Image 1: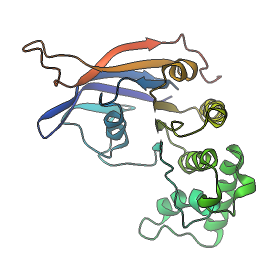
Image 2 (image 1 turned 90 degrees about the vertical axis):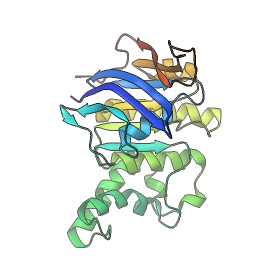
Image 3 (image 1 turned 180 degrees about the vertical axis):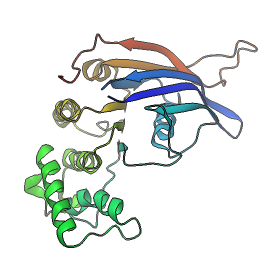
Image 4 (image 1 turned 135 degrees about the vertical axis):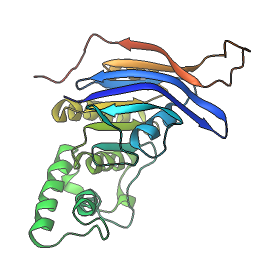
Length: 245
């Protein structure tokens, strides 16, 4: 069970506040959906969780330990824009993570380790329904298939935390529904904490066990709306769809 503690998190860019005093406690395999207007720091919050950028103040702890200051295998991410490598086959894309974990400089495996990584990659491709496309290249995949590939890339590293930044925003309605069903199934099976940013409130209430609303609050001193965003509502959804014990 993953425990995440976020206390008094603040972020500024060039003295302009983006996030102010964000506090959150996560216990267990939550599916936390983050909603709010554009410019409210939702994606910035995910980038801090990923370790891509650092907070200006405050702290994040995972299982009692400070969040590492750079991205790591315990945190997977899927973006709205398909984050796959066009010059690699589907199988090679999924094998890349284990390759860099074993060989940080070259990202290459050989012999038994390469065969083991290929077998594991095929397992996750089957999980997302892409095993039949293992030899194809991303250019020949649909948008939904590329997002499935990005999910397999993240899952093969067995992350404790999966970060989803509007992953379905560019998909047509039918493909979007299929991907929503897929991510729920993968969340249940892999017992992760999921943080997902979306502009679709209906989607948030359908997928999440918890909906967190980010909004800007005017400064109490001068009414200035540029005082940064914080959590204005944190709505538990009665533990719906929690992974089975």
